[in-house]
Amino acid sequence: MPRPRTDIRSRVLEAARERFAAAGVDGSSLRSIAADARTSIGMVYYYFPSKDVLFLAVVEEVYGRLLADLEQALAAPPDFRGKLLALYTRIAGASALELDVIRLVAREALSSSARLQSLAQRFSRGHVSLILQVVAAGVKNGELRHDLHPVVLMAATLALGTLPQFAARVVGKNLPLPLPSAEQLTRQLVEAVLHGIAAPR
Image (cartoon, rainbow, N blue to C red; front, side, top):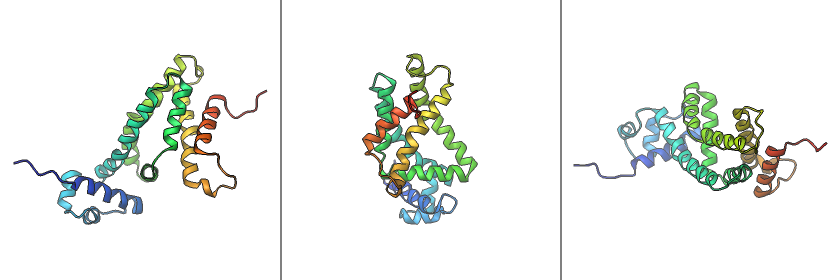
């Protein structure tokens, strides 16, 4: 007879996400996660054989949806500028849950080389590959410089457009200058990526 469908897996993921955000992966016990999820430690192991597997599942639950959104946003615009605008607009609209998981990913990537390697492998098949494809198309269409390596172009695209968006959401209110609106910031970041920050000669 098949097992009845339950919400145990989703309860464990939610409990783990909250524990990991508060205490880190290493500072969270599977027993406390099981208690928070109102289940047994055996059920946690049934779905997630190790804490690192559970961590990656917590990340994937949010990352998978974000990646699907990015793929959809980048599919429509025909040119690099449009794709960049779509990418930065989606990043600017990151939910509180997505920001929490991004913080968790950053912290755990810095604290564990094994987790960093697992995350790097996943991201290389996800948004990194997606952005590289967009950059390669931009180079092929003559929209981007062909004398720079695509990895450099991808790094500039991600760093100049995504980090300021996240920083604006996390510490924007504490900056000494008021920030532009999310839409204005998105458009200005697109301009900075495409035309740099130097004054015209």
